[in-house]
Length: 118
Image 1 (cartoon, rainbow, N blue to C red):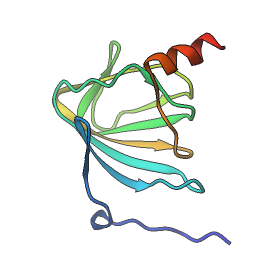
Image 2: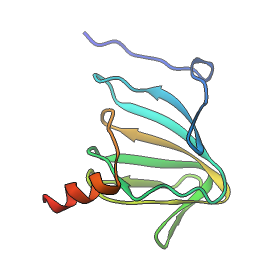
Image 3: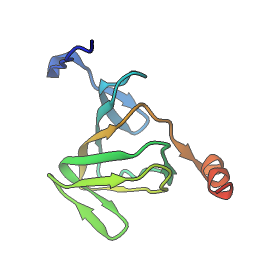
Image 4: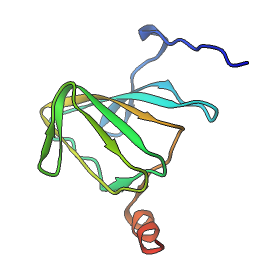
């Protein structure tokens, strides 16, 4: 039988990952994936895609995806295998990212190859 799992704010630490800070809440093969990201003003993700659906919930600051600006409380559903990028607003951004399971990221040549084989 499955057990309820709890995570408290003090259970996880922020770690630097490239130009952002990340706090992982859940990331196991048998579990959903949930993590937070904090990024500075103007941070831009590379054009990329994931092999799983994901939901992004903006907690503070803002992100811009194309012409759409998402401010605190806004959420974005990105279907699996959908290429996208976003830019952090003038105040930077802090968001939650949720996926049904841990997922890799396709960028650059990997992303182009996966799109060519559809």
